[in-house]
Structures are given as C-alpha cells and as structure tokens.
Length: 313
Ligand code: SAH
Image (cartoon, rainbow, N blue to C red; front, side):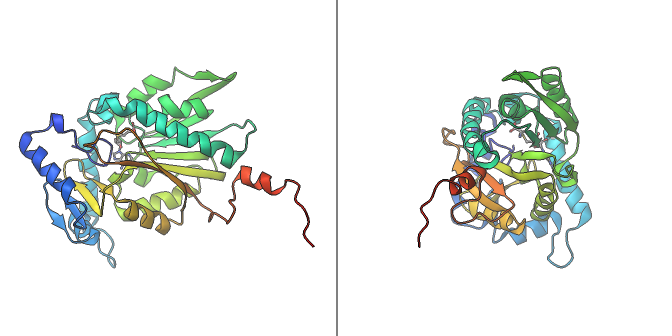
C-alpha cells in the first residue's frame, strides 16, 4: 500500500485489520511527530530516518540501508499493474479532478511566468508512471515533454501510450520526446532545458538528503522564469511512513522546511479539491528559484510596472 504516491489508503482493497491500523495512523498524525503504517510512533523525523536509512547528521546515511530503502520502493511498483488504476492505488476515480485541479493552477502560472506570447515550452514529468499526467495535462500545454520513471514496465506503457501519439494543438505538434528510465535520486537534467519540472506523487520515495540534492540539481535544468510544480499528499502533522512501499508522506510544514533547504521559494500553493475524504489531502506548490519580490517579479507583473504612471515631485 502506498501513501506518498497518491491514494495512500485504499481501504476497500486491504485487509480489515490493516484498515484499522491505518485509520489509527491517520488519526494520530495530529498528535505525534510521526507514525508508520503499522501505527508505530516516532518522536522525530530524525529518529525515523536513523532507523530506516541509518542517517546521521555527521556520518551521512548507511549506503546499504539506503539501497534497501530504494529497492523496496521499486519492488513495490514493479508488482503494480501498468494502468491508471494501478498508479493511483486503486483510486482511478480521482484522475479527472486531479487533472482539472492541476490544469486550473497551471493556467494561472504560465502567462504569469512566461508572458502571453507563444513560446516553445518544454516540461519534464518526474516519477511519471505510465504517463498519465503527461497525456492528460502536460501535452496540452507543452510542445515537448520528457518523462523520468525508474520502473521499466511503467515507462514502456508510457512509451506506448504516448510516443506514436503526438497531438496537434493550435497547429503545433506536441509530443513526448525523451523517456528516461532512472529514479529521481540519479536524475540530472540537461542545463536550461525545462520551463516546468512537474513532480507528482513520487517525491515521498526520496529521503530528505536526496530530496534536497535532487531539487538542487534539477534547478540547473530550469530556463529563466521556469518553475517546479510539486503535487503531493499532505500529512496533517509531522509525517507518515509507509512500510510497504517505503515512502513518506510529509506535512506542509515539513515540505516548506525542505523547500527552504533546497534554496527554493513557494511562489504560490493551492489545495486539490474534490478528493475522497478517506485520502490524505493533496496540495500543489509552485516553486521558484528567485525570492519573490514585493509587488511580484513575474513576467505579467513586470509589464504592469511599465504602464503610464504619474511622476510625483
Ligand atoms: N506521477 C504519476 C505516477 C504516480 S505513482 C501519476 O501521478 O500518475 C508513483 C510513481 O513513483 C511510480 O511510477 C513509481 O515507479 C515512481 N517512483 C518510485 N520510486 C521513485 C524514485 N525513487 N524516483 C522517481 N520515481 C519513483
């Protein structure tokens, strides 16, 4: 069962005893620093990371434990069917509202960051699964989309779904260009290739140190005014560790602390609406590399600065 990569708790498909345990874990989130999917409590994230990957401030992480962490995550996904239902943890029904929510957020950001004139836009879909986000959302707005996905049967399904399937949008071809079979902790983008780096329902697989180094490397892949979208499940407090797929669901405060440590700024954030009540809430963050200035530093806001203004003497 997977908590970080969406539908954290598909209660209908798991045994009753585990259902109770998970409910307990969710209820306890507010009161403790962290829990795992068996209901065990941790007093801090450090305590949990020490145990899971042997992470220590001074010595760094234990490489064997870290490798185990990642290989358990990959094994989990290798056993999942390459379908929308599969990548959404049995909640294929949220696909439409997810896409709608993402599109509304993206549509406010694109003109703000890149202006209204037509441009050749390029995005990368990180932890892309079978290319659900690329197909339903990104290809409608970007001329090229690259996919990064470590599980080969997902990436092959994405290739089949997308590569022969370039779409025409306002007389331009939009297509999936590159398919990279690598995990995010090993991905380094080409310098300055992307307008948007989209990270959805997968970053919970990266422990904090790899989370930070991924975003630091990925920043180099952004074009001027480019930005990240991080769309993830949100724990109500602290974190929830899922022992089955080795992922962590972080709270809003936990995410914001990590973004800060990556040298990224939250330009804007929005809650995903219409999610089933039993699931974690989902949030979208737009992250930028420059500190938002007073009055805004977006393309459109800069234009407003050029409008006729009375000179005060
Ligand atoms: N983002 C897609 C898929 C979500 S399912 C969507 O919203 O439809 C979670 C995905 O994360 C799976 O495809 C899984 O293979 C991928 N994943 C697991 N570990 C990862 C890692 N270390 N780096 C990148 N992706 C990972």
